Image 1: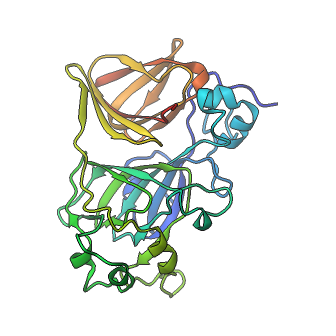
Image 2 (image 1 turned 90 degrees about the vertical axis):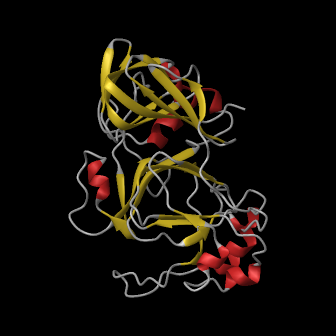
Length: 330
């Protein structure tokens, strides 16, 4: 019999082979990487049938997020339970050592391109590290046509897609329908709608060494999704909500997720009443205090605060930085 969740929850990361990946996620996560091969993604919080997150510790160890939501939807999701059958977000770390394919995700108004059980896919990135030659492509330059995108190649990509070198701490909102790519040594925290639908426009002529073949493209479907009016997509300016010993910055604010970066040297409240909250520690260490019980957080750690436990308190050791993630209730 499954017990109701009464404390914060941690989950085992799910590592994913990607030909563009690397080995940098070993610096963020305590669970060792697979022995060999490029690891491009660590799925941190996933309520998906193909890759479900399992609780890593405590009385619920081994239970999936889906099992907990099925048994206790209000305890996990709170006021989101009437809207969502499963956890509405998918969280990942991406280690993009080479270049991710140039791709696009379907918007909600392209329902015929969204498989049953999936949704549209808007995503956000927070850059955790980057190198001098790292690159982000996001959006379209003025006047780009579908015909030009259909013929996208190494020779034309810089003529059609705006690009720039990312910096640590920057955040980006990639709406469904936005053309994008990133890589050459960038590591990001990715927060997205709980969908795994991607259409590739161009894959840099890569050959997957595990198959000896190019990965398939989905050009026709991608072009149906592209918003030609999207323009140039750049980093978002953080909105300062508070300063001093507890500095809160609103990084991303969309109908699907809201991200705040909190840098503090003194204790402060985390979580919200009646709504689930996800915490990601991106710098430093500390403890989440839930009714007198400490739950340690180190760099890279991810924690879900179920709606039922309400507010907790975070006590940083010296100074620490958390990303606080919530789904807007309306």
